[in-house]
Length: 373
Image 1 (cartoon, rainbow, N blue to C red):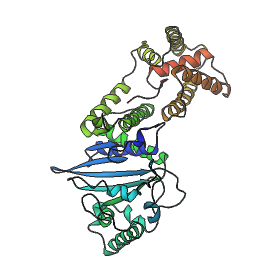
Image 2: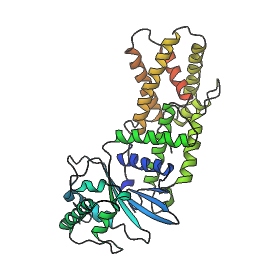
Image 3: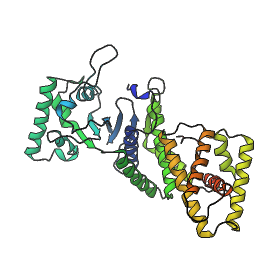
């Protein structure tokens, strides 16, 4: 089992976003049927082909190596083990997973692109069988290059490096930013297929919850909670749609139940909760009968409050902030005051700023603790 990744995982890593991407593929047509996080490999995909299963072992390399990937880099030892011996290279580690009765394939996902020798592996496996002889010669050149670096290597099933090259596919994903955009698009497609529609902030909340779900699977102990590392298509789809519908539901008119829940989860005491409810009530009164701000001014203030809180929430979920609930509430209040001080025109009072924040929280667009799966 791959247990190294279970230690000290903070923030949303490149690998987390790759795992989310594969989970969303699973929920779209022609995707895998299962996604395993940090089990047999960084990620493992299970493909159902008729009555058979095929495993895809995924190595994710999000580090900035400063240059294109080469055969030498691919065959380089990944460091030193605790006993002083050299760790396996990416190729050796990947090939070693060919040990079961089920057929397997391999995938390498990197932030840096492969060089001119390796970029033949960017060609999808699905089209290689019908490819021209020139492509096959390039695959042979990759095999020869790896053999020059590693010598003869075979998997526990007796398959050679040629087998690995023929069954390996490279995926170039330059940055987390690109991945997030792709994942947002795929999430919207998954929701559209299910007949669900979320606003942008609501979709962001669902996306963060999906990342947290993937992280939870990644850190699960593979020895004692092996099945927790396994995300299944139907189960994940039900969870995602149920979560989307919870996010969609507005707070009851005039009620503060969602606000109270969020403040309680953040360990805000009873007096603080009552003060928040009163500030929200006063903001709601201003909305119904404006005394301090015109409608346009209020819309501007509310939009800015949502934007500031959204940025803070992303920082909280990504591990940029490691605040307790009370500390994060103070951070939010300070950020809103700074926003107000930089505004031109009428400046809202603390009462309206905080009341607006609590109204936004009651509408499930903000919270004070990291997203939970």
